[in-house]
Image: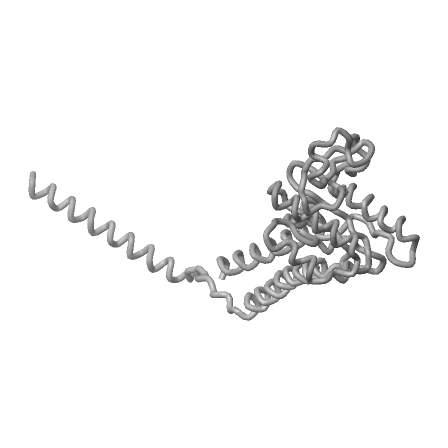
Length: 261
């Protein structure tokens, strides 16, 4: 019983620690931020002009990636059309082509470009195939990602509607579309399940403690043997018997000595 109780308590405590750790840290190793959702609520549709909404997503993503935005560095890293390969002039002021492809129209600048991955912020309500500029931009990033062997991550809102054509761009490359930005009123379902895990672990401890207490209460305690005090007359009789036995042993010894002499 004690071994089972110890095992149940250990399991419950491990569940509580694991769930609490994931809940507090918001940990997710599947994207470079290592977070399930953004550290801040971003501006969304109707709360500001579209340009300001887009910049707010980039700001929050820059904070969570712990990176400076690509267009804040000089020169800006760009993916360029092949015609710029032999050109003495960059495609735009303060830009540098780090990748060339005939499939890229003019040039494209990702929000974040590192030696390990490419990342782009799309803080919008939808990402549809009819948004030609967005689609061609992400298509160019996917081509560069495949050739450079670097994962591509497109960060959108938790509720952004994304057309299937965008997902198809990731068929042959690593990374993916990350539903990441939290907006006003957002509740993460994973957090909810982790909270249930903590409550479940605590419930196991409380219920098992109660069961153990009931079992202990209902189990009869074995009576310990109690020494019965010897009666006074019994002590006297035993003493007389001991005296008689000693007398007989002494008499026998005296007789043997007499015969020997």
